[in-house]
Amino acid sequence: MNNIHLRRTLPEAFADRNTISSDIWHQDISLQKGEIYLIEAASGTGKSSLCSYIYGYRDDYQGIITFDETNIKTYSPESWVELRRKSLSVLFQDLRIFGELTALENVLLKNSLTGHKKKKEIIGLFEQLGIADKLNEKAGRLSFGQQQRVAFIRALCQPFDFLFLDEPVSHLDDENNRVMGQLAANEVAKQGGGLVVTSIGKRMELPYTQTLHL
Image (cartoon, rainbow, N blue to C red; front, side, top):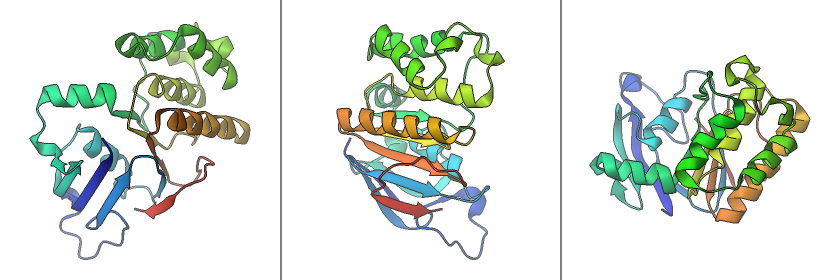
């Protein structure tokens, strides 16, 4: 996948609003593979909804979203499985961590489906993000910031054309923000993918190609 195109897309919940001031909603906007985008938004402007639309979890929107000019509403469940396995990786704002599993088990569960990284590489990511001592800790016992880092590592454990990170550093200090940004940039460069990061205040520090305001 090389292009995600939003044409006059708008959440149905916003349909009765008289005015929409946005670089994305109700516009004609394309996200290109190989570019790095920052989407800045205020709370309640549909940031997480946008990620859910693109990932195919929700379809309660007006307008059209296409992947390489194919309307995503035409995809079969089998096509979505393949897209999520090879083309799209998302770190959701609510993380979707399995609290009863350890931090490492959460990541290995994903990696067992993709075989994308060696266990040694995964442990290396835990070390770089300062949570190597939490490998065998139940994820539900970790702080939100620690869970963010686990979910981020998990998001890197697959091939992708686009990586979406929804508020990935909201609970991180500056140093972990810097390290996560570098790791994201490295993985995107390695895979030749596109990166889309959202923020309602604290942003991941990256050389963004374009900043869009939701």
